[in-house]
Image (cartoon, rainbow, N blue to C red; front, side):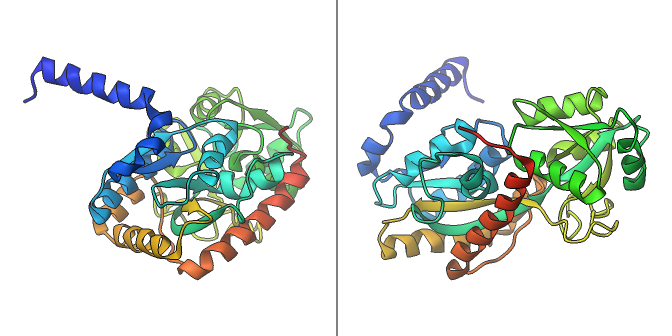
Amino acid sequence: MLSPTTISRRILIAAGLAAAAPALLAQASDGTLRLVVPFGAGTTTDIVSRVLGDGLGKALQQTVVVDNRAGAGGSTGSDQVAKAAPDGRTIVMGTVGTHAINASLFKKLPYDPLRDFAPLALVGFTPTLLVVGADSLAKTLNDLKAMAARPEGVSFASAGNGTSGHLAGEMLAQRLGVKMTHVPYKEGAMAMTAVMGRQVDLMFYHPAAVMPQVKAGKLRALGASSAQRSAAAPEVATLMEQGLADFDLVAWFMLYAPAATPPATLAKLRAAAASVLASSEVAGKLREQGVEQRALKAEELAGFNKAEMDKWAVLVKRSGAQVD
């Protein structure tokens, strides 16, 4: 067991590393790989990144430092990697937000999701679940539609304007032919609390976050946003199964390097990522977060990214969401 002195020393070292994060790239000569997470600690993106970071460190036989660079819907950290030296020592955990939605959401996005990055590997995807409070009158999707037809209508929460949860809610309203009032929160946990407290009627959120509350009797899941049922909640029917054709929206995670990274370096990073993702241990840890794997070849990644940008652009336009 570690002594209190040793524990204190390690805490101080960790704090020092966090404070020195801006200088990490300058220290890249020591062989450190910097994995930028464009969102805060404790988010699904952060947890997934740390799972991959551990594996990448072993596969590449070098130190991997996870560097949280939150801000502007993930654009701050993503832009840092877009402009980083293309030497294979700086990569980013991109998401459906940073590399698909933001292209239409932001009036002036500082990077181009396709031109400024070289995709390395699709880490996985996660559907969102449509949930209501456990004591909501809506026990089925049809009940929810009936609620929305009342004069007071219904409201839906999200982790912010232009997030996948916001756009999924807008799509649901359009497909049901009803009007729903959007209530954005600063983070998903706050939105979920509001739904459990009946301050807001419903929301779309990740299975890893909502299923413990469903099992605890605080939320009720009415449907999954993906074409296939979630492995984390196989008992929850998809919205497509319930009659909403082509309702297939998922969040996803993809590793990227700066666009000008040499082909040989890209090949090395892709091989390492592929070996890590093939690990049963890593796959198990991803499933714990509700993240399911979908194998794509390296040459298919850019096409997937472009198709996602086009799909979400339609939803952003329809929602009217815009960020300066």
